[in-house]
Amino acid sequence: MITDIHTTRNVALIGAGLWGRHIARNLAGLGALKGICDHSHEQAAQIAASSGEAYSGDTYPVAVLSLDDILADPDIAGVAIATPAPSHHDIAIKALAAGKHIYVEKPLALSLAEATAIADAASAAGKHVMLGHLLRYHAAFIALDAAVAAGQIGALTHIRASRLAPGRIRATESALYDLCPHDLAMIHRLMRGAEPTHISCQMICHITPGVDDIVTADMGFANGVSASIQANWMNPVKVHNLTVIGDEAALVFDDTKPWEAKLTRYPMRIIRHDSAPDLERGEAVPIPITASEPLKDEMRAF
Image (cartoon, rainbow, N blue to C red):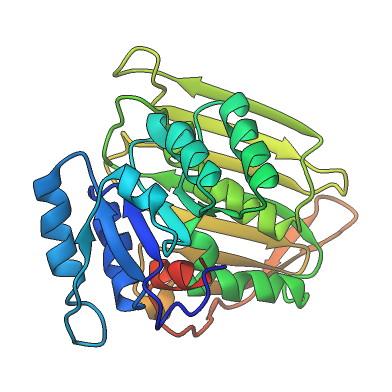
């Protein structure tokens, strides 16, 4: 999307918070970051200074800019938006109207109406919108997706995603918006863009009124594949797990494990007897993958 990313500093970052600083580091490492905007000038200056040291071991200046500076600069082709979720819609609309391609950290928006408005604005402007679905760029998921496509689990039957953690509790967006986009994006990819024919979802709030902490969702597809998601930020143990089950084997992507153990294939199939069916299981086989930083690959794609 953004051309000459290694030689042209044509991307600006809006939002230099906990996640924005990682986006800044990776954009700077690719030689693409021109400037940073944040409501805290001091925070933006600090991240700009440290990001400027990330490019091939050299230092180059990263400017501290206002939103108006960014929108008015014809040399800035793309804008990465990493502000709090309630602000995504307004900033995205302004950036698109100014002729910028945009990357928006998940969630895109907090309502269907706002998300549709962003999509319509991008279409009208002839610009791209890229969502921050980080795990789509994770080497383990890419290998898992390729294995499924190559038939290494047989026919796909079920996808189960668990995203649990004693995590950062949000005050404005629920666990559905904060945690589930990762898993929905992976399911969408594995289903090759097919939309579910039915969805059931339960959300429970325990901490902040109106902000759900626990989410369970089930969905089914026209080809018979089912999928389930479990997410909450109140779990005492971190669980980031995607299990993909076929009629010949299963694949498990466990992002809490070291790289050599993140992706494992489990041979398994149903043996039908005259009485009850039996599950025949083989020996688990780790699938080797090359370690990489998903965010860097995502920024490179932008």
